[in-house]
Amino acid sequence: MALLPILRFPDPRLNTVAKPVAQVDERIRRLVDDLIETMYDHDGVGLAATQVDVHERVIVMDTSDGRDQPRVLINPEIVARSVEMQVGDEGCLSVPTIYDRVERHARVTVRALDRQGQVCEFEAEGLTAVCVQHEMDHLIGRVFVEYLSPLKRDRIKSKMLKKTRDEQGRGR
Ligand code: GNR
Ligand code: NI
Image (cartoon, rainbow, N blue to C red; front, side):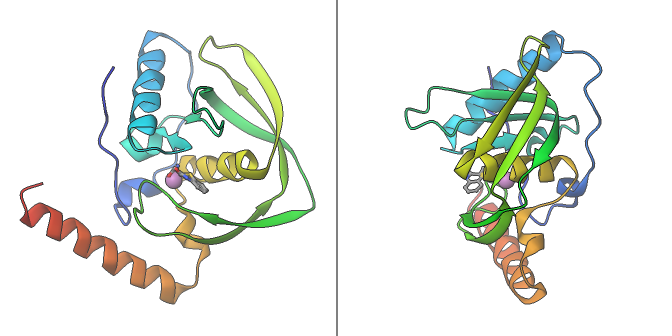
């Protein structure tokens, strides 16, 4: 297992569209395990392969209270979405310290392959529904701040560039 470095907004690699996984093999399982370890290390509720510069349709999530129920979604598809929407505060490991409101479908039905390559389908609501939509956006190259106003997005962009510069100045 390994901790993977996470790309930071506005890195253009975050805008890459991921390709479907052709076969759930040992390489993909290793990626899944590294994503899970990296997600827990950063106390995240989800992580998409895009964020670690791997452009394949792989997501890991854990929205359980005990943080002991990792979920693996390979080639995820939303097969149904509620008309009802919900607005919730979102954050992103690729946009650290920034939280803002985003409107999402309140419920989504997701179909994906699991770590074994088996098809699984479930209905998600609340934070899990938010997380699925947030992670699936990463796979099509979209970061949540792109839903905010251009003014806010530009401010966040400047703040992230400065943060990255400051950290590199300190030799990190
Ligand atoms: O850890 C995360 N928390 C979170 C909170 C509200 C809505 C979405 C998220 S996902 C985020 C981890 C992340 O960046 N996943 O891509
Ligand atoms: Ni994110």
